[in-house]
Length: 74
Image 1 (tube, helix red, strand yellow):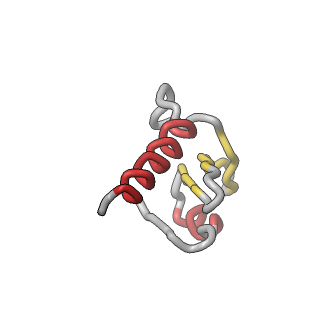
Image 2 (tube, one colour; image 1 turned 135 degrees about the vertical axis):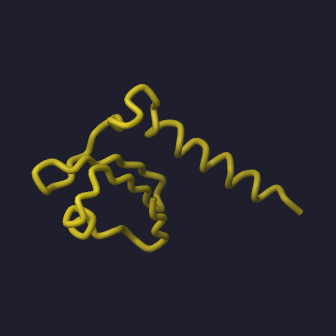
């Protein structure tokens, strides 16, 4: 796992490394799951590793809740 706080990771680097799944979250709150297919990442709705877990819904919601908790701390 890598967490990249810059703009967006370069997908070509991960494709060359053979990373089969790439998750990306941008600063507008958009969450994308990408699967490597013939050397090119393609967006998908569900992760093959977590097929019944709605990552695209749960992770952004969890991050919003975490941010709200951080704002409340004195």
